[in-house]
Structures are given as C-alpha cells and as structure tokens.
Amino acid sequence: AQSVTQLGSHVSVSEGALVLLRCNYSSSVPPYLFWYVQYPNQGLQLLLKYTSAATLVKGINGFEAEFKKSETSFHLTKPSAHMSDAAEYFCAVRNNAGNMLTFGGGTRLMVKP
Amino acid sequence: DSGVTQTPKHLITATGQRVTLRCSPRSGDLSVYWYQQSLDQGLQFLIQYYNGEERAKGNILERFSAQQFPDLHSELNLSSLELGDSALYFCASSVQGGGNTEAFFGQGTRLTVV
Image (cartoon, rainbow over all chains, first blue to last red; front, side, top):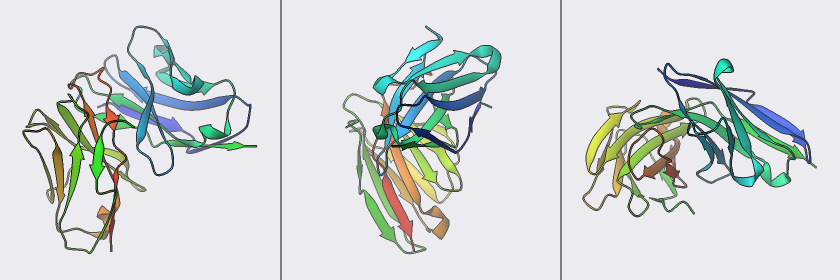
C-alpha cells in the first residue's frame, strides 16, 4: 500500500526565509505525487505534481519540489516566504488506477513578520 | 475557484439524524471523489464514482453511501450520525481516473453533529 509521511506538523519561518516542507513516500511502483495547499476555510488547491517527466517540478506561487527516488522524498521548497504563504500543506500520492489520493498528515506553515 | 461546487457549506445536525451532501463537479469531469477531513484521522478517501458507476471504496462506513447521477452530480448520504462524524467533507472531480490525473477540490461541507 502507498503511504506518505510529512515530517513536522508545524513549521515556522520568518518572512523572506527559505521554506522547506518535508514529504517522504512509500510506494512499490513509480509514484504519482502531489502537493496541495489549504488556506483557512477553503478547499485544497494543487500546488504542483510529479509526472516523471522531470525530477524538479515547478508549481504555482513560487513553490517547487524535487523528486528523489533514492531518498523516497518529494520535499517542497520556496526560496523566500511571504506572509500569504501561511496555510496548511499536504503531500499526497495517487495510486496507479487513479482511484484515490493518500494524504500525509499535513504541515501547517506559519510565517513571522 | 476550482469549478467544483459543494452544498451546503455548513451543516449542524443532531446525533442519529441523516444528511445529504451535494457535489457538482467541474464541467466535463466524469470522476467524482469524496474525502473526509477530521482532526484525528486527517484527510481520508471515502469513495469514487466514474460516470455514474462506483469505481473505488476507501474508509467509508456502512452508514455512509454515495451515488452519482446521470448529470454527473454526486450526493453523499450520512445516516445514524454520531458525534465522531463531525468533519469537513470534500468532493473532488477529475476528467478521468488515471494515476496522473489532477483532482480539483470543492470548498467542502463542514458537518457538525451535536
């Protein structure tokens, strides 16, 4: 069964600092990986997805993630945090049949002025 | 705006009652998914429908059921409600069900059981 682990349920950074949100996956086959963001009282919005075309994936709002098979990781980064980035971030893996997304526990990002 | 519409946005009901949550997928999307988000369980997949047919089941209780209608909208029925059913219920849709398919999420229905 596929699974996703997000290290750190809460991450706090200063405005302008690097954002690093960690995600490790477990999958017996090449995974389909996604990062979603959830702003307060809103639904999930796709930030980016890994499609096996490139290991470095660029997403919206300046975020990117690097797929590292040797480390079974798909960490999300952003060079410079903005206050508007404060939200909850979810890493997810989709099964090959495309039936379901399995989500990590989420990481709440706080950005300090 | 993802294009996925969920109604109602909020629902408060008593234990033992039955409620129906509604989802209208994005135009052209054939696949609808239901997810439950709760503090203790996180985000969990409940069920998927594709073009009116049930395609996959996740951690969905027997008290819960869903269906997808010919116009592709979907309903999630929750019955004999318990306090622990209080959660945010999301609907998502996609064009099809392939592994690479992006799912678009609605804003959710927040269910509170009192």
